[in-house]
Length: 294
Image (cartoon, rainbow, N blue to C red; front, side, top):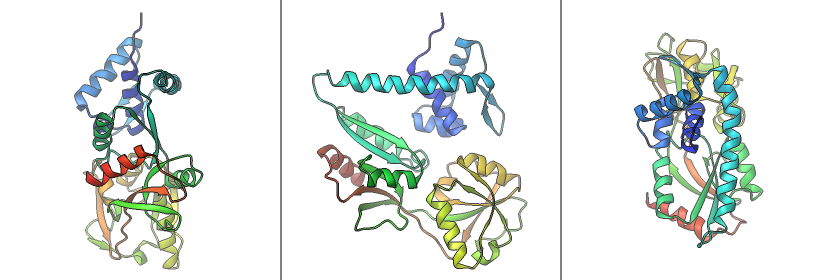
């Protein structure tokens, strides 16, 4: 009889999300070896291989692709069960709806959220991970209480904004690129380059294009990707170059890439944002104060 746990399914989904044992184990707050054992145990239950593991890439097998469909449904059903059962518990559970761009692990925010949840047992922190444009629209339409996004042209009239972490855009190339030995690069030097960028819903994508237009050129974008590890893999093969946040890149393997600074520095803070027109709950205010202190 096959026996699997919700914990194993969550581990599978986190590894599928990052395709990287280091990042996945960091978000899960367990060691890489422990995560590997859990995944291996899950594979043993079905007697299949769910992930292709190489020294450079982790990809889903056909069995993994099939299991992914069921795993997502199981977690949705599990979350619904937990939420509906909580209303029968002795103490009412309060809910905070928070959206975030996919940077919790890279900026070391995950442990802080776990600490808050451990301290506030009766606050359910429901986190949705999407790109900035989607999150901002959800905040505007009161579908989220709080959001972690990059502060790019956010209106002080519309939002309350608490800047948390400063980070800057940098140019990333392969070790074989002509920029490799350059510490600083100007926008004028980028005109003839091929770019691999984050998807169109990311603020970095739009910010970079806007900056290029200021220098009278439109960047030649050959690929748009939604996983940073995929972008870095393509860049390391000298297929194109990219522009990403400096602190985010540092959480990935940088041995096969080169990082150069922009001559005209572009700083994009990561900010906690909420709608000025919305009245925040006591629980949301507690979370904001917790984040300020930590």
